[in-house]
Amino acid sequence: MPQYPNRQFLEFEQPIKELYEQIEATKKLAEKNPKVDYSNTIQQLYASIDEKRKEITTSLSPWQRVQLSRHPDRPYTLKYIDKMCTNFIELHGDRNVKDDKAMVGGFAMMDGETVMIIGQQKGINTKARQLRNFGMANPEGYRKALRLMKLAEKFNKAVISLIDTPGAFPGLEAEERGQGEAIARNIYEMIRLKVPVICCIIGEGASGGAFGIGVGDRTLMMENTWYTVISPESCSSILWRSWDKKEVAAEQLKLTATDMKGFGLVDEIVYEPDGGAHWDYDDAALRLKKSILQALHEVKDVDPLERVNQRIEKYGKMGFWEEVPANSLV
Amino acid sequence: MKKEHTEDIESRLTGEDVKPAEQEVQEEKRSWFKRKRQGILTSTADKKEFPEGLWNKCPSCNHICTTQELKAALFVCPSCNYHHRIGSKEYFEILFDKNEYTPLFDEIKSKDQLGFTDLKNYQKRLDEIHAKTDLKDSMRVAVGKVHGQEIVVACMDFEFIGGSLGSVMGEKFSRAVDYCIQHKLPYMVISKSGGARMMESAFSLMQLAKTSGKLAQLSDAKLPYISMLTDPTFGGISASFGMLGDLNIAEPGALIGFAGPRVIKEATKKDLPPGFQKSEFLLEHGFLDFIVDRKQLKEKIAQLVTLFQH
Ligand SMILES: [Zn+2]
Image (cartoon, each protein chain N blue to C red):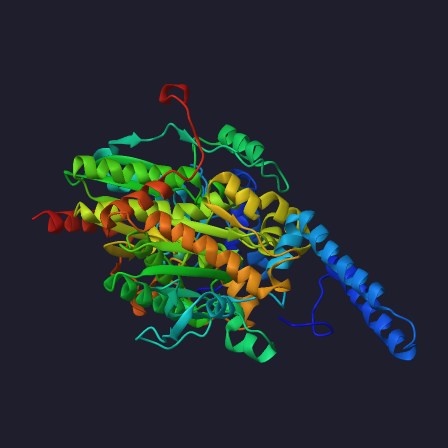
């Protein structure tokens, strides 16, 4: 992960930036006055940074959580694969149109077992962000993911899906090639995939674009991520008819990991290092890996047909309504 | 002359209705004559209700006819074949023999579990809509006969929060599939929706998997599923059961897509080509089996059911 001064700071992370600046200033002071011992001061400042990191993540608003999920220093799919797996071989292409760089995947070894690991990939710098289309896949991305999942099914390997997207790409060609159909097909095929599927929200879980690789036996959600049917910005623009209500929209949508766990729509929250996953990639990946392995362990021994039935049942229970006797309605 | 205009489909998902239909049509009539005098002809948004005895103007060709005439033509413009937007009541009447059918799962109603408040509280919004219309939600299910052959039809109502997909639609859809399996009947869904219902947040999103799971069961039971897409069908519908038919069919000229035209324009900063996201465009790109004129709909469905069953 980037070290100071290459770190990027969100607005509510500014106090941490100030502490780093104090450290830099103290270090310069130490150079000028070699006779004075500043090591204690510097140590205290580092301790304050640790404190601040802890403090920040305990009191975030839903909107700040959304901001954190988009933190430019946050680890993305390939980073997690690198940290959690060995022997990763990336596989490319949907065998039809092209290779979508916003979606990656391939075989890898995790804790001694081969898995198929897929996910949306965001770019780590300006050039890469363009290449990865900001993590917004086209239909061929979803079809590549499906091809890899079917490959996993054929060879009886579990599927791990890492979700991080601001949405499926809303483009002319995406529509021409059937963005809706691609996502629909994935959801349909994932619910009846015979091998275990573990889905993890590692960043942004935006609507159909996320859900297109998001149907499985277990869904894990990292602490500083969001997952719902629309981005707070778009929700604000449609329902409030203004782009300025994103904070309120984020609150109303109840899109945080805590909310989603409370609703029973995700199975587990994966807690992140203090301050967020971007503070410690190794630790973040270790925590995620532990949860994935635990989830895999829970579902791996189920008979394949029973697994599919359980999945259909699980999603079948999701929703809320009231039933009124038919005769009371006229 | 036909006109292309980018409709803001998402705005219908707010649940804020346009003015009462009657007032709108009359205003429309007045303004139309006024505009005609000025030589400016613009189509308006009245596509949803057709009060008796009033005049209706075709949004596509400006042809004017009475509601009775339009109804007799199954709400298809006699002049240019534009398919006006209609609801479940009209589709059931078109499809079912003698307009006889049994409504199913009417007892399921939406509620505001999340306490969602945008410009209005969701529960309040629901209560107000329930007070105004007979519709209980954005989808109605019925079983009846089409030329003597029994079929289950689930049909959306665009006027109920833009035909949005929420928990109730997901549950009705699921029970309809169970009913089909239990009675060995074909299933037809008529979609007309702006997408998922935002006021139910992630619960709406989960309906995509819930309905897909039921379709997997319907498929295992070897029962046909016909998905008919009408104007407009977007978002969560096209990203789930809308596109998953054994047969996907559509009405002529219907706007169908994943992202709405306004969203695509904003994201790509490009003008949309003529005919983009129309059913003819989808047919050309391989996503539809055929386009069916409303006047042939009943005939075609009966024909299909016969083919599946013999
Ligand atoms: Zn016309």
